[in-house]
Each structure stands twice: as structure tokens, then as C-alpha cells.
Image (cartoon, rainbow, N blue to C red):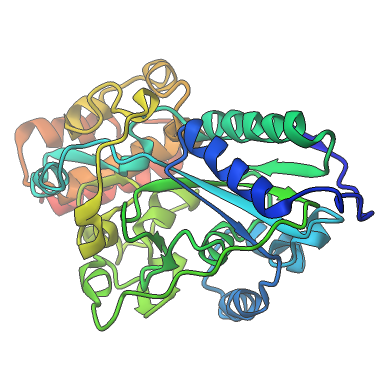
Amino acid sequence: MENSINTENKYQYLDLRQLANHIKSQARALGFQRVGIADTNLADAEIHLLNWLRNGYQGEMEYMRRHGVKRSRPADLQAGTVRVISAAVNYWPEMNHEQCRSVLDDPEKAYVSRYALGRDYHKLLRKRLQTLANNISQQIGEFGYRVFTDSAPVLEKALAEKAGMGWIGKHTNLITEHTGSWFFIGEIYTDLPLPADTPAGNHCGTCQACIDACPTGAIIAPYTLDARLCISYLTIELRGSIPPELRPLIGNRIYGCDDCQIVCPWNRFARQTSEHDFLPRHHLDDVRLLELFSWTEQQFLENTEGSAIRRLGYECWLRNIAVALGNAPASGAIVTALQDKLRHPSKLVREHVQWALQQHQ
């Protein structure tokens, strides 16, 4: 998936502008909706990152500080890097946002973040980026590069912004004028001194719909997210007990949260993905909490095979659903299902089940 990046200037014979156009054309032919080229100066993003870490907003995500400034200095992560090719694939799986809202508005159904409804994107995106790198090799011969798909300390949104693909919105997600924010990003770090694209301007204006919509107030200021309050963090990254005061605010969101994206005006331009792998599996886009809560561990493993949900693990899966059932209207079926899990071997599961039962007393 990588070649050793060559620090010598051996590309003087190339028409780099023509090569950049060829790369973008090839990327689009491979199914990337957006592609751009960035330089490696991330000084402003580094300041923002260090301040974010200093405030402890990363919570228990210690990997965010583990690699120091390698995340914001591409050449420190991969020696010889002078440019980053950034590319995006649309994953929006539905026809319109009303489908999201209808699930969120039904407390007996489970809301799963739209990016996780289909297959895990890492393999697809990585394979496609590798194919793009192979195409470049066929065009110019051996060159230095390394492919990334959320697999190393990379400031992918900051790089995509520099590459002119869009701007980082107040909710800290990347937004494009033409497709909104429902897409995955991957990168090729390279020693090719390609012409860098012009960064896109910010078009959020005075809008703060995302800030107002956040169920837990995790967007504590424009462009600043306190992950410790974010439902995506609480239901995916956090592996221990969810703070009791935040549990009622989670509602029926059992894996991630999309509220800030659902209300973003720019997502009115979103179009359903053409990637079959990203379409919903096992009816996870419209399924009842009790059905998912009844899955055995074996069923969970079978039904999440090839999915991003698999890494959550069965224990946290039950933890999250228990919280959602505690937030649902009381019913005999819900109380019975929760009581059946009171003897679960996991202390974490039992704690959240007991909390949920207390909500129905």
C-alpha cells in the first residue's frame, strides 16, 4: 500500500500541472466525487489541535495525542511528503432527510449513524486510493507515496479544506457546496511537487443550525467540539459507563449521531450514494430497539460482519440499546426485555439496564 517516499527532486522532467489534471480525472473515473491537492502547511490547524487537546476535549481518545505533531506535520509522519492528494466518496444512503427524522422521532426505533449502515468504508476507500496510486505509477514510473484511510494520525479534514474540497463547518465536519457533508475522505501522501489547489472559502455565514441542534450541547463554540459531550463519542469511542446525566439526551441514538448534519442547509444538495456497499444492511436504517436488543452475541457478530459497528463490541452494543430503551415510552415488552438482561455477565450492561428500568418506575 506504499512506496518509500523519495526526497530527491527527480521530477523535473514532468509536466506537473498536466499530471495533477490527470490524477483528478483518474480519481473521478474511479468513483471519487471530489479530489484536490494540498500543500503540507497545517500550522493553523496544529494550533487548533493543540488547544483542543490542552482543554481535554478528546476525552479518553488518547490516540489523538499519542503521535504528537505528526498529525499536523505530514512530512514528520512520512518523510519526503510535500503534497497530499485528498479524495472523497459520497456515502449518503437515503433519498431524503425525512427518513432520518422519522426514525429519530420514533423512540421505539434505533437510530444508527448513516455512515455505518452499510459496509465499513476503510477497505473500499483504501483499495480505490491504491488503484489511483498504481495509475500514477503507470503514468510516470515509480514515485514516493503512502495511502491513508483513517488509519494513521492524519488531519484529513484540514487537508481536504486546504485541497479546495470544501470548508470545515461550525460542527467541525467538512462541507462542500455541491454535495454537503455526507462523504468519506482518504489521502495519498506523496513526494510529487504537484501544484496545490486553492483552499475553499467558508460559507457557514451566520448560520448556527448545527450548534442549536446538538442534543448534548457538544458544539461548545463555532468550530469547537467537546467530544466528551458528543453522542458519537459516548456511543462509540467511550468503552465505559456513559455519564448518567447525558443518558436521557441520547434518545434513541445507539451508534453515533447525525443531528448536526441533518440540519445543515448545505446537505440539501446531498444525493444518494451510487456505492452499493454503503446502502443499509439488515434494515438498520429502520429497525426497532427491541429487535436489536434481542440479538445474541453470535447474531451481533454475524450481522455486523464487514461493518464499522463490529468494532464497538457486543457489550457496548447492549449498553447503548439499554440507554435508548430507558428513554423510550414504558411498555410491558420493554420492561420484560430489560429485566431479562439483569443477569447479564457484564457489569457494564447490568448497570445501564438497571438505569433504564428505573426510568420506567
